[in-house]
Image (cartoon, rainbow, N blue to C red; front, side):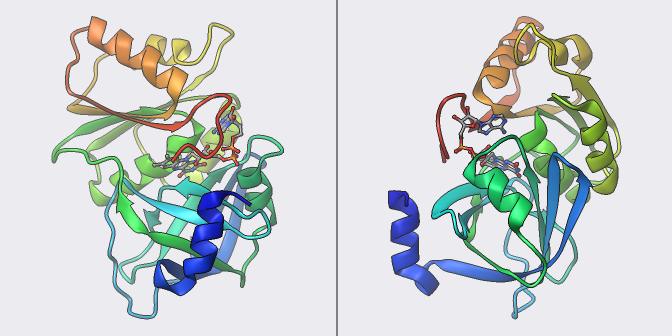
Length: 227
Ligand SMILES: Cc1cc2nc3c(=O)[nH]c(=O)nc-3n(C[C@H](O)[C@H](O)[C@H](O)COP(=O)(O)OP(=O)(O)OC[C@H]3O[C@@H](n4cnc5c(N)ncnc54)[C@H](O)[C@@H]3O)c2cc1C
């Protein structure tokens, strides 16, 4: 059990919110979309780009997800990438309708200025793009670099995301395929996902004269639960 999950378990209802899983969608074997019922109050107390830190049942670990608003009643969905035999991947494949999910109250993570934006990332970035696209229809362009283009395309379609480019990762390392695919960018750029991808794409964009970049690493090779 990690120190953070032990602390959260001890503090319980003082800091944790709880939602019931309404449904789990499986758009492809690499993703789960976990639909959570609204809170009893019906309040929607978070915005696009926020994060929730979820206590993973039966793993005693805490991992971070980006909530996507799925209704005006405060209901939200989590989009979980399944990438191997890790606590978050095991949890995502196990979680079922009717179960309860506990998490720390949503907190700000990637705040983008108003107007058109370009969001760039990997498999872990689908949710942040969906969250902003729902809040700002027609203003979000998204580009993802992924291992499995077909699985990502199915998930992008299930999330109803438009104006998306999917680049398949190449042997040249994280970010190389994205840099080839980006072209010109629109508005502020939000960079999320793996640390190596962020570094390479940020350097490439800066070399091309793009200055308005906000970056947030979602995971780092060799490290666990970085948030
Ligand atoms: C603010 C924020 C928002 C996030 N939102 C989302 C989201 O909406 N959906 C989502 O799926 N993830 C999201 N993430 C990323 C997710 O929290 C991490 O990928 C998480 O660490 C995965 O936990 P794990 O138990 O699978 O792996 P860990 O136990 O944390 O790591 C084990 C090893 O797996 C590798 N690894 C970790 N993540 C990945 C990955 N994505 N791809 C390939 N290898 C990896 C690393 O080498 C690591 O050493 C977010 C992270 C942050 C900080």
